[in-house]
Length: 159
Image (cartoon, rainbow, N blue to C red):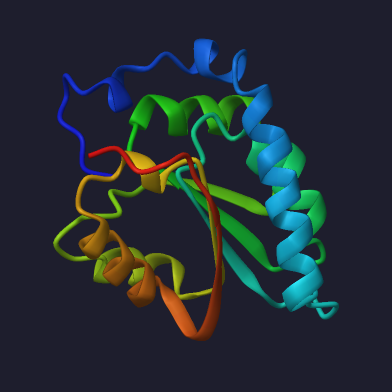
């Protein structure tokens, strides 16, 4: 996401967010259920997943990870350093790597070099905050392996 230092996206307090995201959990779980019915699961455990807009990491750790196992790992990213630090300290797991990523960055090649490409990209209640949707979707395509899949849920776009 593209956000400035005074943008509410980067200044939202992780403690407030994690205490008030229950409605999103239900929507996220339904999206995951439908996704898995359509695309199945990798029983070999070799797939790598990206959680785009992980926020505090609570859903990544407690909602997404159990439904993605076995897997090689989940790389969970957010534009907010505060959110990523909170996620690392409160919702860490050996199968989850937390990192900072702006999905509308001019170049995501360094990120791909560090982490590789992804079999599936999950994004829950994130893309509706992104102003440059075209750039975000182009970058998501660059982050995915050929034939990769996307699972997303979102509030209506704001314009």
